[in-house]
Length: 196
Image (cartoon, rainbow, N blue to C red; front, top):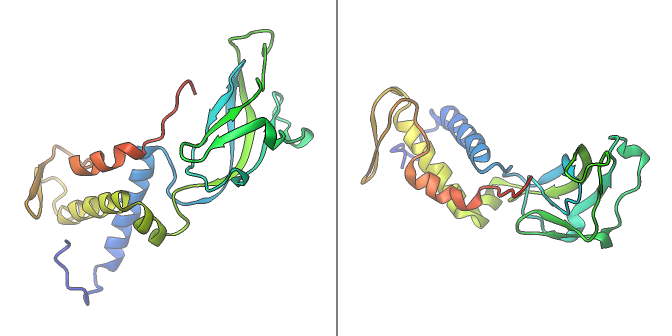
């Protein structure tokens, strides 16, 4: 795809930077980190809100949630974790469903929002390694590779209006945006948030 001999390593540094840059852009576009890692996140809670959408998913098991703490005064060290029987995690979407209302009538307002009132410590993401993403999410890996090729071909003339990848040509205006095929491959992985 890059028209470089497999034994030629002179461009490895540049290609590595392109891969890193495209990977970061993919994470921004889908609003989710790719790497599986331990994370601590804090979320706002509206009064009578019972669902929270994690940023990094999928999760492999309910036990990937290490703790959930609710504190409207942000003193998470001073409160106990929510019992794991009081919530359920949809592993594929990262949605946490509480079987109770974590907050009711916040500041005597059923429409009020308690800011950063819930802290969730968990492990989530697509895969722990690049090889894991390539093996389990080939559409994401191919989207990254396709975009890297497009950027590689424009590296010396980023102002040009067209780029060719095999039989595929794309017309661009200004900086190289995601190619249509790349966007189409990534859209199903975009983070969905409803009412959050």
